[in-house]
Amino acid sequence: MATIDTSGSRRSGVSVAAPRARVAKPGANGGRTFNRITAVVLGIFAVIWLIPSLWAIKTSFTDNAVSALGTQAILKDVNPTLASYSALLGGGDLWNWYLASFITSTLSAALVVVFASMAAFAISRMRFRGRNVVFVLLLAGIMVPADVLIIPIFQLLNSVGLLNTYWAVIFPQVSSVIALFVFKQFFDGLPKELEEAARLDGATNWRIYRSVIMPLSRPVLSAMAIVTFVGVWNNLILPLYVLSNPDLMTIPVGLATVQGSFGQRFSDIQASTILGALPLVVLFLVFQRRIVEGVAGTGLKG
Image 1 (cartoon, rainbow, N blue to C red):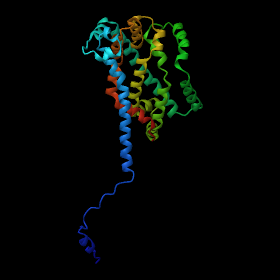
Image 2: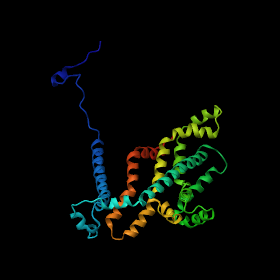
Image 3: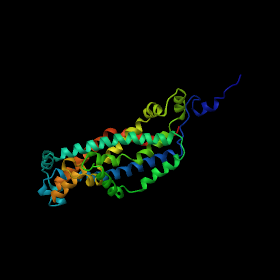
């Protein structure tokens, strides 16, 4: 039988069964240092980002007469007031702007998700002549600034009688090349075996799109819907050109008129800005996890 020499361990006073001492990995200290530096840098950027927001909030709770005196007067003011918010919310126009922005943003997001995902499915999962050329031409549209197309879009909407309607804001924003690209990248990463199994069962392209691809694409669907909603909500140029009816103005256009009419009433301007951005802040806080999952999922490969 083999024997185990324990004399050395006894002499050193260490048991054979004692666990080995942990040896620090060479990169452990470097990793902790990197994490600390990253946390400090992110903290600095967070403070830099929060300062204008806190300043806007402080100004919105300051009387217009005080805010007109300048920075020092705003900082020294210790009598917060809701006068600016009461004036805006009681005027009635803000609620119409909220309604217009909500309608146009919701419908645009829904249509972008449907049409962009269908186009991405055709380019990603179907084989036809000129497929790559079509995709390259679509991507080339990203290089054309949207502001350049305002005049042609205005003339086209005028010719079909859609000016001063919600559709004048919705239709030009449905053709989102960015959403199509994100959907295609996500669809490219889905396993092709699922599609092949569905075809063996007699499923058509429409059935595969509806019953196989779309249920697996919920993260990117929600992410693109939220991103599109925010983009349409914040769009100023297009509604400014195609809407002249005050009852149909969206939040950005309405806020532009407020800033122009209020002049030196800085508190009212800051309060209107905060009220306009508040729904988007709530939206991001509620759905931030889905946005990150959807965007990160575009890099998955099956």
